[in-house]
Length: 402
Image (tube, rainbow, N blue to C red):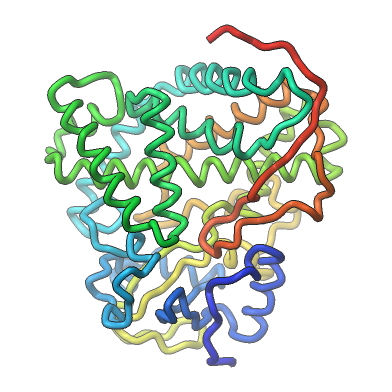
């Protein structure tokens, strides 16, 4: 079994991550030693059973990063820092504190009226499409798929479009982990802090107000990072989910031959993408609470475990026989106590289905404007999405009713 660490950054993730994961599995097995940016070490779990075990055993693979034994190797301006800093939120808490937060978040998101959500999503989709439907083409990523989830989540937070777009841009900068990651995190905390102060003094019918009013008793200092986590978990992954599903439907004959009226295929495409091109490829992280064997590797106490969601979904031991179109056993929403709350999954799927339905209803002859081979994926090993999605279509009339 190869013990030489794999560099977990670079262009290989842009070209063919499937081949890269196959190579990792052949050379290293289900648990891969890796080096993140700055040569910071970790273990990447790409075996389905092994990852399921990690996610199901919090007593052995815990969430709080104060256990990490490699903090002394982290550069001061490390681009991954916002994703591992121990900020008290649902994402990083454990035990009773995690139950308190998860109960509140689930209740707040469960209160979202899914019918109203669909109506709002449709209205906002129509408005975005009206901005380009009179032409003969557009880049769907920049004009549609990257914007619609941000607009809908802004509505859920009670924000206008301008403030919503600004927060979505900051969130993208933070998650992408570039040089501006820490600066974006600081700006996001400031913007969200202002929103919390506003909602505390003048509550409304929105997610922010409901969280502040919940019996869990969130202080302003607790609410700000929690709301950022909810926004981050809903915005960029949903945007990439929609974009990746549209790419599949525009390039795969099983879908592209019947785009017009393809409503029955939309959920199939969305589910298949969660197997093949899941938006969140790798998630950080868990930390071993003791020395433990995992997938034939000795994991030392304090070692970081990276959740290889994409690699696990590609594990040949559990691959679905139907290309993933009806099998929902993927790990794209994670698993166990820290999996994506079910109401959040419902909201994301509602937005994604509506986004594709409205687009195909309005522009039924949508076609990819370039050969599939010219599409370029983001180079990040963490998120999966195309850099652009250029399409052509016959000009269509504006809807004009919002």
